[in-house]
Length: 196
Image 1: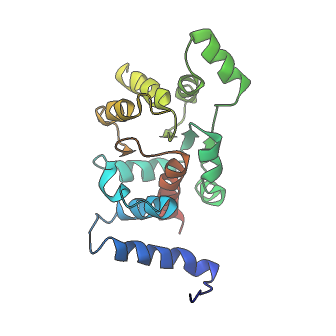
Image 2 (image 1 turned 180 degrees about the vertical axis):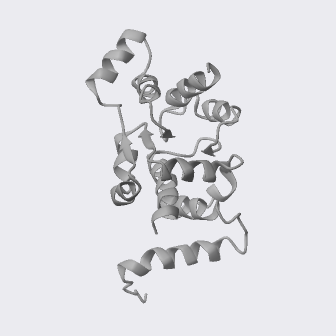
């Protein structure tokens, strides 16, 4: 076996070249490609080439929000940790996760819901443009759907379908796949489109 040492700045470029080769000439729209490749790079799962769904103008809408200092709210601290802080700072954005806050736990207890749903309620009160990066909590997506329509694996597929039915710009991994790493990868791809 012949191992090769690759300089850090070349690793990502080489990885994306390998992804392109493995996709055997499949083409993706210019604005979708960086997100698609970043998710595949993060997961080493080429199924995302088929199940990552983009609503019309989702990337443009997200980029516009990021240019205007959007707050990214995640459903896990892991997703928040995975978002590039340097890129966030360049754009004047911030990432928040309310899941482990005592205030969120208390709100969930009082309302008889989950901390994920209570986190969405808190995010809705921020008074700023918000991008939700949900990778693990179907109840967060369900609560987000409730806000939009009002003016484990449980419910994963159904909650994603609800979000896709709203007409709100979205990037969703259809089916059961996803997670904190995918949510962070999508956000990072969008950030890098503006900062690199």
